[in-house]
Amino acid sequence: MAPPVVRSLREQIREFIVDGIVSGRWKPGERIVERGIATELEVSQTPVREALRELEVMRLIESAPNKGVRVRRLTAADLEEIYPVRAGLEQIAAELAAPRLRQDLSALEAEVALLQEADAEGDAGAQVRHTVAFHRELVRASGNSVLLHTWESLGIEVWTALSIRWLGTRQRLYAAEHQAVVEAFRKDDPRVGELVKEHVLGCAPQGG
Image 1: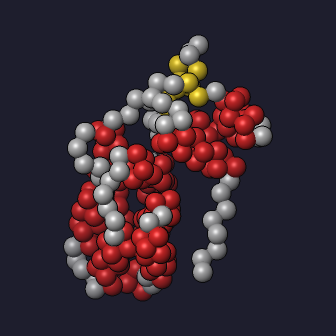
Image 2: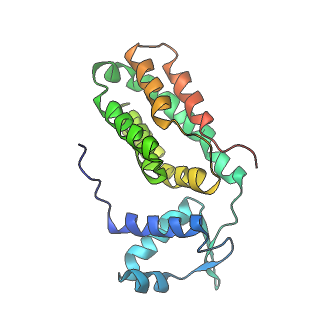
């Protein structure tokens, strides 16, 4: 069993706000009040401010003088924009990681096993977590810290959650798709970088 993931207070607050946006608690254009969230969660305003700053960098919310922080009016096109960038990064990562992953696929296989459980239970939250964890392990295996930092700065988990929960992408067999990626590394497929790129692009929301 993998140890439970311990999230920082800032991350927990960020997830709380994202879930509120996805669920419709805060609608596009609606103001998010920093002090109100701090009071509701019984925390100081500092981690709330940090979480909001992260979400603004990710373009999920926007702030303006004298208007405060508001939810951006997102479209499917906004969500789609991240996938070609992510796909390019992960193609490079896969090509760099291939020699290492030929030797040890255990981290990727562990996430596939957890995805099988999430698929069987229809647990969208777990599907998001383990899909993102799989790809983070793939990028980490590249051994390139700049590449990993750039990938993480995209806010992959937030955008994956939005794509799955908000736009309702129709992927169901997450484990099978990711197992296919594992097999490509295991077989030392010379097209593994291209296959990973195609896999990421195939996760993009359709239409909009």
